[in-house]
Length: 212
Image 1 (tube, helix red, strand yellow):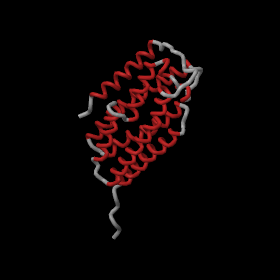
Image 2: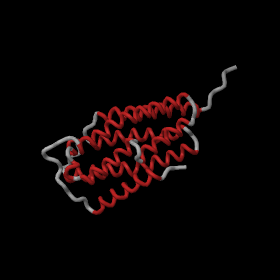
Image 3: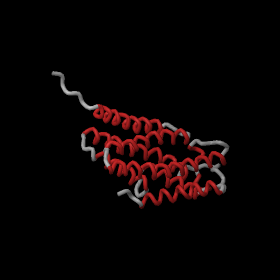
Image 4: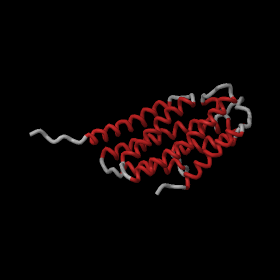
């Protein structure tokens, strides 16, 4: 008598684990190698997608709440970063490399602060909203209770530390790296100011509003 076959969902679960680990790890490794910020943020987005999928592992109400919260925090923080990148690109002759942000805080402190706030949230640095979103995702995944789920959560935690390094590289360029020719001071247009204000408010509100 042949052994009973396992349900298809069993195999999909482990396939999901593999996709999550590869998405987060490979994207982080490629992100570290980037000096061009648009490509850098593209790999960062792939990594963030892995964290979003991690919330699905728990297959519970907590996982759904964590997934929703993570997506909301990610959207506002990512939009803020890309808005700043777009503005700098327009004001700096189309440059989007990290060196273009050297000394950025000296001439444009407000944009530097908003960029830092959003990057810290994406990195999951406390007490920013991204830290809470990652925490809830990890907790939801750990509720699954299997050794495989714990391993995936561990890998995600290690990759969070790796991501801190490459997000802080941008902050270092803006605040620490010296240059004789920083990007001159400029004023953003009204639409850009409104978009950044909405994103900043979103990051701040999600930092104090936590899912039940």
